[in-house]
Amino acid sequence: MNYLDMNTRQMHNILLNLNKLENEFCQGQHNNPRFENVQSYIEYLDQEFIHHNKLASIYYRQIPGDAVNFFKNFKELDEALIIYSDCNIMPLKQFNFQMNRPHIINCFEMIWMYKGDAKFMLNNEMIQLKEGDCLLHPPNLVYNFNTSPDSIGVNILIRRSFMLDRFSQLLNGIIEVERFIESAMRGEKNTNFILFHAGIGRHFINETINNLFIEYLWGGNQRSGIMDTYFELFVRLIRRFSNDLVESPHNIGKKEKYFNDIKTYINLNYKTATLSKAASSLYLSKQYICRIVNIIADTGFTDMLTKVRVEKAKEYLTETNLSLECISELIGFSSASYLSRIFKNMEGITPSEFRRNKQ
Image (cartoon, rainbow, N blue to C red; front, top):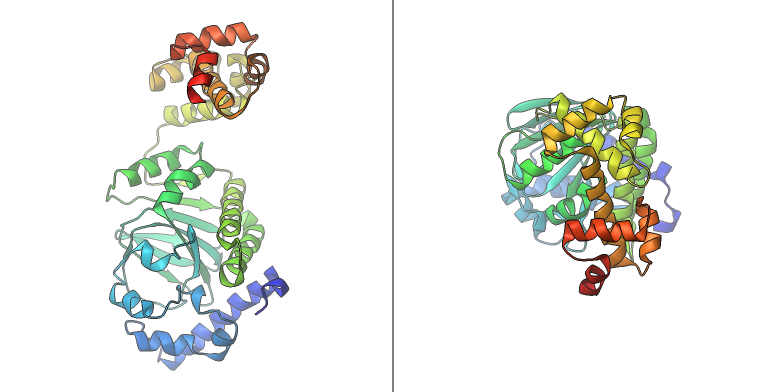
């Protein structure tokens, strides 16, 4: 298979052909494929279509000797065993078999329903997935994933460090995700997941998944960075087409949701934000906004806005050589002298002293 000749339509057809092979193999095994042993796994992957097109790693990274360890340790899989050392993520096609094999992996995982539907059992809780659904779950939870016949489920394994350091920023502003991350970092064993419904945009998202698979399977130099880029696009499309509306077992109160909306508004509009503009944009009264901010953050709206502006000023002071006059204009302060006064009140030093210390 020539990487330069591949396109998303061909990748789509490959996934459909793999489904056909899986179904035929399952019937040959009397609908009970014995994937508990290595030989059945090798027998399936040795088929001409898979061998000729170098598709074996679409199910699992193929390194000599690893297959034995994979099956031996299937109940508790380590990210070092399933994710290539030079990659942050690993896209895999779900075997389209009914396998009652609950297991644990110690990395994050996103499940994308490319086609059809599936049953996802997480800590003994059944979650029904349909085409266009995307489920994110944390490490170290017992789960079992079974797709329906002719369905295509995509497993995207995500390194813990990548998830916490970079990926979580892509989902910033969704309060359910914040609770999800907090719970995962504490290592809580309760059922914890995020479920996005992005069915309306599944065709666009599938194209991105196809490109991700192409890069993973046949990409060469810069493969990891390009995969990261496709994955970032995948997540942003999930956000767009789900409208940030998610299902989660975390109980999020109305006031907390409103506070998150206020915080997101300030972070996006800190240069021009005012209480009146926030009230108009969020369809809340000014009094109610002040009350929510006071209850949740024990501060005022103006103080919260000022804190965000000062944090942005610190970024400019650290990463650029822009003048204080320019920075004050960029963050919404009326003058450089006002920025200096507010900055010193909050940080204990002037902006110039802060910049010298950072340098």
